[in-house]
Image (tube, rainbow, N blue to C red; front, side, top):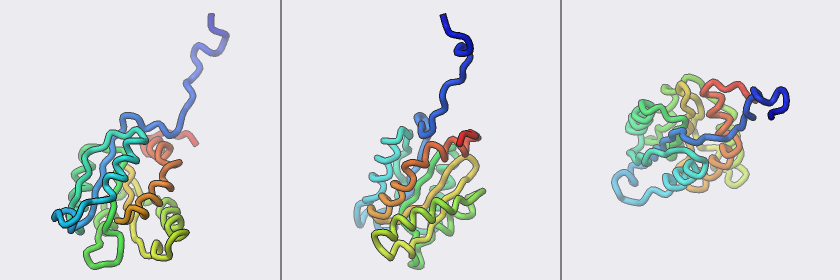
Length: 176
């Protein structure tokens, strides 16, 4: 027989459980999209998302610029919990990923990008040149990571302890 008060006790809330949530990956690289070289960051991001329990759509490798915005918009129609981009965050004229991402965000989450740049700056001063946004488009978290595998790893390391709680919060969970 159950002891009093345990019959209707709520299940413990666990942050970090993302099982069954969908995620998308957009790689901004004109050269990789043209087959000039292999995308090195998409597999890193996809593996990280899979290891964290996300159901990941195949990575979309698109040319820099507006095709990135079109790819993000296409993913948003599938209502993923997370969209991670890589590439197009520098200062070259065709580095436009942040510019096509910002109009899609309902709310920015600047502390995440501050932490990503801080993590990168611990290894290279060039991290300060990386532009990018993190924010919410409805219940979807979107983040722009750099185009280098090391920059991506720095960003994923920052997201590691946050991603489950972040998804919970965007979906309306109020746990802290």
